[in-house]
Length: 204
Image 1 (tube, rainbow, N blue to C red):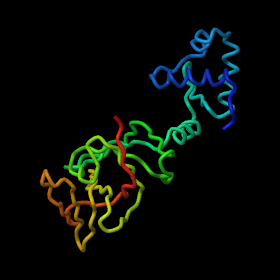
Image 2 (image 1 turned 90 degrees about the vertical axis):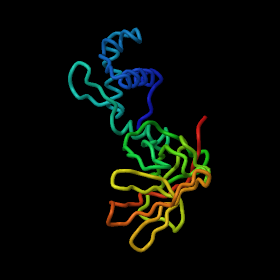
Image 3 (image 1 turned 120 degrees about the horizontal axis):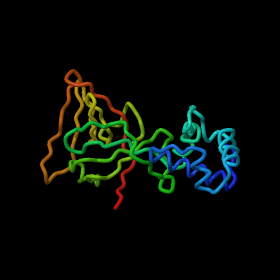
Image 4 (image 1 turned 45 degrees about the vertical axis):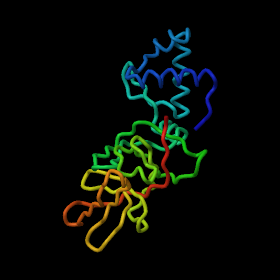
């Protein structure tokens, strides 16, 4: 995308903050905030539209961030955190982005990688704790005995995975708590491997 001048960056930042708060600004409000005449704001907003940062959906407060700009922000911010994954009983893994995490300084995940927040303690012997983020590389297959994420109907869980003839074994890793390996027959549930765990980290 075309670079912005300092003034354009400030106006875009103001608009973005207001949109994030659910209050799209009018050009009059932008002018008042920056102490500019409205014609100057009209030109600034016009440049932001021309350079692809904003789109006009019509109306008094009809400016929105463009999809191209949002995509560029996502790439800059890192990979998405898309809800939670159970380490215990499976829970719904909602496709609901709660933030982004930038891991480029640590390793180079694929462009499709995503993060899931762990809920439960069944994998603590593998160093995966409740509240950790596991980094998942999408894949419909996984090497025997590797840690991955499995979707059971509409519920996701992280376990060490063993694929057998007509069933899949999900092995926990918490010896003290006595979690048992769970066996899921293909006919019982819609069982689908959605990715392999390639990393895990926690924030304090």
